[in-house]
Amino acid sequence: MSRDLRATFDRAAATYQDARPDYPAELYADLLDVTGVTPSAHLLEVGCGPGKATLPLARMGFRITAVELGAALAAEARRRLAGFSGVSVITSSFEDWEPRDRFDLVYAATAWKWVDPEVKYAKAASLLTPGGHLAVWNADHAMPSDFDPFFTEIQKTYDEIGEGHDGPWPGPTPEEQDDPMAAEFDASGHFTVVGTKLYVWALRYTADEYLALLDTFSGHIAMEPDKREHLYRQIRRLLAARPDGRLTRHWSAVLTVGRRL
Image 1 (cartoon, rainbow, N blue to C red):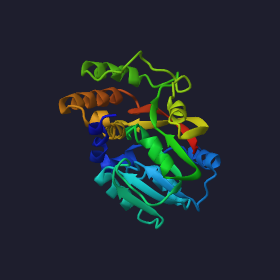
Image 2 (spheres, rainbow, N blue to C red):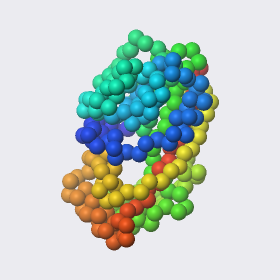
Image 3 (cartoon, rainbow, N blue to C red):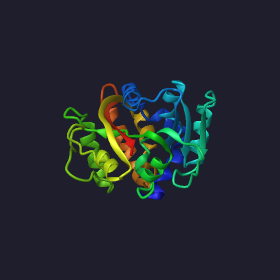
Image 4 (cartoon, rainbow, N blue to C red):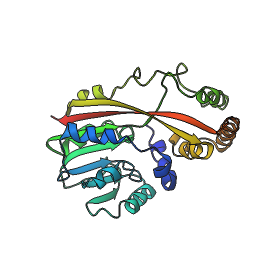
């Protein structure tokens, strides 16, 4: 993954938390069930952003050390997590950070793909207690069979500006989507997969809400301004023609949990 792109998220620090979706409560319940961690455990989060996946676990009483590359995102996380004395936020890349502690669970939410593949599994394993776990999940755009036709319509604009979808359109459904994460865990030689699960949910967005979401995506942040402005005008035009002015975006997440070998 491009180091330039992974640094773009800091520019969305003020809006990321509210614009991005919350992960399903069921995901956290499954995470605790598979790993067996209780609030006495010490957790390490890699790439916490403004605290999207930190807050739910902090509210359960977990002690969490969170590492975040972006200074503005880390500052936003500290502000939002200020009421939790057991939570600390470190401004650093995961690759460069050298902690003294060991952890019962290392986890990353929509951040693991940005970490150096030559480093991340070996380092995560070295920071875990014996029998400790690594858990990874993302939030991706899902295309179930009943996806909103808005996305086919707006795809024409993406094609016009040279930002079109790779591969056939539409892509596979969430159930058909290839997920290489479990194989990656196993191939690392540091973890054995003990659980995977798919979650799919849908949210409704106004034009303003959807554009705020797009402003948190690396590709849109880095897009040339004239291309982005044209795209956003077309989104507003398409949604203004709808009776309620809204679209439905489906999300998917795959939770992958591995136990340290």
